[in-house]
Image 1: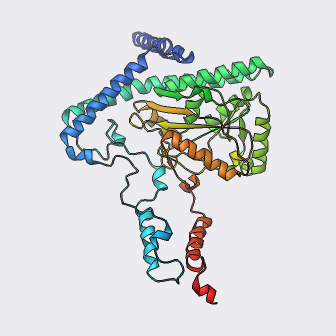
Image 2 (image 1 turned 30 degrees about the vertical axis):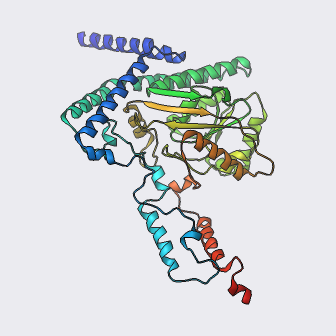
Image 3 (image 1 turned 45 degrees about the vertical axis):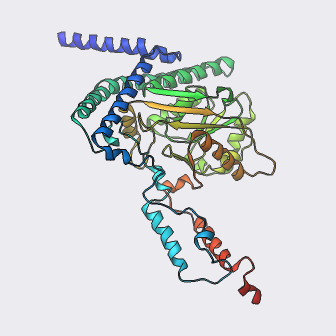
Length: 438
């Protein structure tokens, strides 16, 4: 009995601390300063670790500064320059060497697949999963690392799991109860409060520190919010500062339970797998949503997959065919405290969440940008590219023309045919003397 009483007291004390110091302040959107103190200590510790590594092994400081440096030195000149002197003459066998060189460069290091692996760090952040490029470990650094493992797995992990469980439970219960109310201002207000409160608790369960910029440009009702996509928690990051109507595919399991509860209180747009393939049906439902200016802005990630926080890939044009006002948002995570990128081909959701909850913290910047509308004579593809470029510039991300679907699919034949057409035009085009003589 004494053991049970002791366990009960420990549990009661634990829940009281969680409720009083973390749960209630996060629910009301305030901070007691504990996370700020934690972040200051963490920053000082990582700075000290970086100095120890550089002092113990000077060669380590010569590591690649970022993934953009690359393994090989590429020749980024266009095909016309690479095949100088080719215009206006026939094919030569030496042309094969140019394409062979480009093929080998793509095999060694292409600019697409490296966007689907974790971002490389400039200095070690005391996580075993990121020390592949930092081989020097001093005794003092090892002691700090061991202490960090104890803190992350024995203190932070139980605390974060508790907060996540409470946040998700309150979200399901709260949205289910609110969904029983008749449609009206009261239901909409309560729904927004439930979503905001629960998302703030869930972000706190990841020790999230978010910096919002240009809040005057926050997405308005009746509009469409588009953002670059790094992680499933992008939704939590944005919903902590405002509510959105989400668009996505219907899931099963725990995610399905959450979706069914949320849609009772808020007009989220969920599709069955068969409906997602019907573009006309999807477009129709989205147009109906934005036609009502009282409904929350739709949140869409046009890339369609998670990219590793270094780049922005092709935006699907469907989101830009709907019409209405586009509210671009740029999201950039700080990988020094934890890698937010979800490599879905390597980790399932449970493994990913475990990695997130055993990281030091999730730190990111969110930039709201001025609303954008389609210009006269501009088609959906051009509009999508213009919005993508604006997000890439604001977030300091690399802009790439490739489809994120290449993460799981082969290159489309149209991409290959485009290169073949460009090459053929160089040979037979531009008023070739050989053609004129024919």
